[in-house]
Every structure is written in C-alpha cells, then in structure tokens.
Length: 182
Length: 265
Image (cartoon, rainbow over all chains, first blue to last red; front, side, top):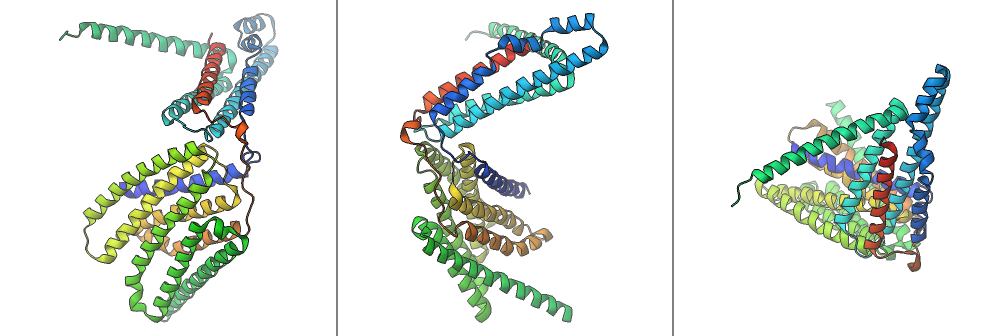
C-alpha cells in the first residue's frame, strides 16, 4: 500500500510540475533572455529598499506611539496605528518582492553557468526559504499586532532564543569539560 | 442478456472509435511533422510516434482477425513502446539543455542516480514477484520501466522549473503531453496491480481517453514549427557559477540582517 501511495505522489507531482511549466511559459517576459546587467540592477533595487533606513526604523519607533498615546484622542491613535501598520506591511512586501525577483534572476542566470554546484545551490535555497518563512511570519505578526507590538514580540522571542542558546552553550561546555580524557 | 449484449456492443464501438481516432491522430502528427519540418528536428520523438502507430495497427489487426493472438501480443508490444518512449525524454532533454552545459551535466548525474535507484527497486520487485508466466513478467517489467521513466521525468521537470528553462511552444507541447500521459499511466499501472481494486477497473477504462488527449495536445502543439526561445548573447551570460552564487549569497545575507536590524527593538 505504501508503494501505491508513493506512485500516486509521483504521478501527482509530474502533473503538478506540468501545470507549473505551462504557467511558467505563459507568463510574459519569462521567455526573454536575462543578462548579468539585470542581475546588477536587481541588486541595486534591493539595496534601494534600505537606503532610507532611518525612515524605515521610524515606522517601528516606540517614541512616536508613546507620544501619540500621551497627547491625542483614541480616534487619532487608531488612525496612527492604521497608517503605521500599512507602511510596515508595504515595506516588508516590497522587500519580499525584490528578494523574490533577485532569486529568480539568480536561478535563470545559474542555468547558463558552466559548473553549478548542487551543494551551494542547496545552501542558497535554504537561506531563501528561511527568509521567506520568517518574513511571512513577520507579515502575519504585523497584520495581527501592528508594528509596535510586533517589534516587542520579535524582541521578546529573540531574547528567549538567546537565553536558551546561552544555556545550551554553557551545558555543552560543561559536558565537554566533564568528559574523561582517553 | 440483451442488455449485456447492448452494453458490450457499446463498449466495442467506443473502443473501436478510440482506436481508430488514435491511429488517425498519430498519422496526422507524423504527416504534419514531415510537412512542417519537425520530423528532422525531433527524429526520436517521431520514431516513438511511429512505433506506437505500428503497435496500434498490429493490436487492431490481431483484435479483429486473430483474437487468440491479441493477449500474447499485448505485453511484448507494450514493453517495446515503453522502451521507445524513453526516446521522448532524450529528445526533450538534449534540445532543452543545449545552451545550458552546467544544467546538462547536473541532470545527467541526477538521471544516472535516479535510474540506478529505480532499477534496483524495480529488479528487487521483479524478483520478489517471481516469474509465474511470461506475460506477468513482461507486465511487471513494463510497469517498473514506467516507474523509472516517471522518476527521471520528474527530476527533469523539477530542473526545468527551478532554472526557468525556456522550452518554446513545440517542446512545451511534447513535454506537457508526455507528462500528462506518464503521470496518469503510472497511477493506473499501480492500481492495476492491486488485486480486487474496483477503482483500477474504472481507471483502466479512462486510460485510452487520456492517451487520446495526449495525442491531441501533441497534434495541436506540433502542427507547425514555432520559433525557438531567444537565448542571451554570450557577452551577456555569466558562466562562472562561483562568482554569481557568491554575489547572491552576500545580498541574501545582507537583506536578512537588515530586516532583522530594523525589526528588532
């Protein structure tokens, strides 16, 4: 029965990839050749997202929300939160889009290289998948909690993760030190 | 009895219709291939179509004029067409990757790996099943060859999707028709070998129709020769993988750390 399931999965995957190939070919611009200049342009476009880092950091600034909470009506606070959330989501979506375009160009160009390395490709894919998952989780957090609370949640998660990492490192160091020498 | 005869006649009529339609569409594909100049371009694919056409005609003649020969002939001819269908993979592969030497090398290695693994699995499966009859052994071998083919096809499709390899309308048609046929065929074969599975009987009845759809896809997409996808000029291509991958890695790492720096309090 497990053999049957494996064959059904194999057959389904073939059909899914077939549909994917049709979609890939029907998208406009997908069939035109890409050049290394386009890759450089995509890199610049991605850098441009972070050019005004100070302005982006301001979206998440705790000072702003504290000021608004102190000196305005609930209606203004609500409007402020709504705008900041929209800005934060827009920035993250733009970053995701630029990274996706950049990876797409990388893959299209990598197809023409002489000796692509499967190991390195796997590493790059893992990095991209990591970015994809974390950024989408972040997007969800921004939608649900807004930029200020999302930042607090991220800070708390990082602190907890750091704490556990530190504990693990100490334990590992203790275990290594306690090992009998041969 | 009368109802059974009516159903049986209906089935015979639909079987004959599918059979004749298959032969007609295969002939049309071959004829259009010759007229459009695609026969010279994709000789392996058209050899496969010719092989299937010959098999269909032999099967049809045996079915109508020597029914006692139909069963012993079925699996040997089926096996021959499955072996011939590997030519379609070779054809798609050699044309699609002619500008991508790295992918070609990578795919060849992956093919060998999949082929070796699948062959070992298929051989052990064949040994376990025993050789109760020649027909059964041929049927098992045919099924296992299809599984191997499906594995190779999946690897090839994954690489084409991953590296966004442009196929052009003719080759895309061959690929889509072929994947549709192989995908459904292996699922059907898997059910076929499950004893007492009613779904298998229904699925088997659908198989000729799916093959007819496949032929339809091939006929439409290979009706005329389409232009090949434009390839970038040699000066625009970066052949050094390490250079390209290094840059991508740096950018990805930098972007991730910048996002983390902004979002962390």
